[in-house]
Length: 324
DNA sequence: ACCTTATTCTATCGGAT
DNA sequence: ATCCGGTAGAATAAGGT
Image (cartoon, rainbow, N blue to C red; front, side, top):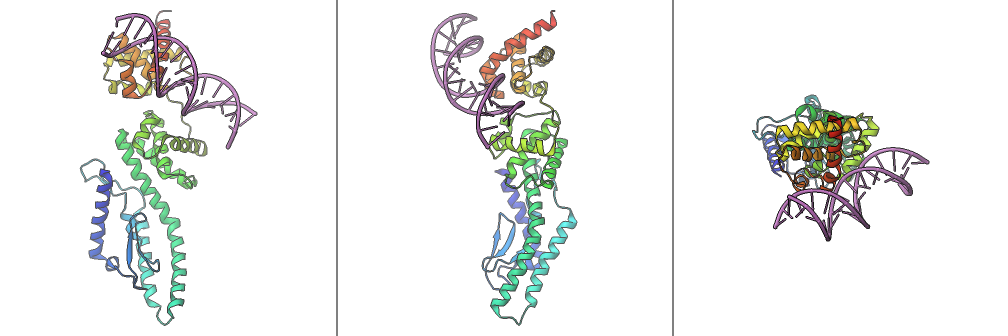
């Protein structure tokens, strides 16, 4: 919510700045048919309500990518179209305006038809390029937002962006929501960097449900051939330990427990997060810190059922391993 | 895409600390 | 009174056809 408001205000500021320098941008009446010009927030375009003339496409280039995520307002990350791309678009939009003005002697209906035809051609040229760019900007904005919320570092974000770009290049997007795909990319990137977050955690910061995220991830994984190892429960350990506020000692014991479990092979087929949470519960018990199963359930989202069913056999494996 | 199997979850209860 | 452990049935994930 906050970011949305920041975003729009940034956009407006940029818009105002452009009004001062480029005269065609402040047109409120269509130069061709005198219809009203409407600003389309969603598409970032100024269009005539009567004839559909796109007065200014270049606006979109100042869109969602101008965001500051660190709260300081001075570290806006610029991801997306290179500058040359932007200039190119600007030039095009101006060209349309002048050409339309140059056509004079024709009757209105013929002129309009010609104009519409031309606009359609332009639009096609734009949309094939610009809609992709818009997608990327939207997507990267979302990536940043979610990564910040989850505390995922820059390299991880970049990996996510790279994966997303690949997905776009391979035309994996059509028919899928951008949000689901971006979330899936970040999920994959987080796992690849050995700092996984549970799917439910992603669901909490994403605007889509778990199922589409998961579907998108599956799709990505198979189509792009991302070779991502199954998550090692130990990777959840530190994350959970700090959320549960257990001692470093307990965390260390939990690590040993999980190592033992892996040697015994009792971890296969079990949810990594469940194992990590159970190991921490068991370790806390061994180090005489009491955390209840209910607490674990509430803080890391692994049910009491799973804790109960795992922790006992984890302890068995641990004992067996340390005293043979 | 559908079906099968193993795992986890929700809800619930009795017993223990 | 709260925590633990067990149970049944629903939901979900992953693998195979």
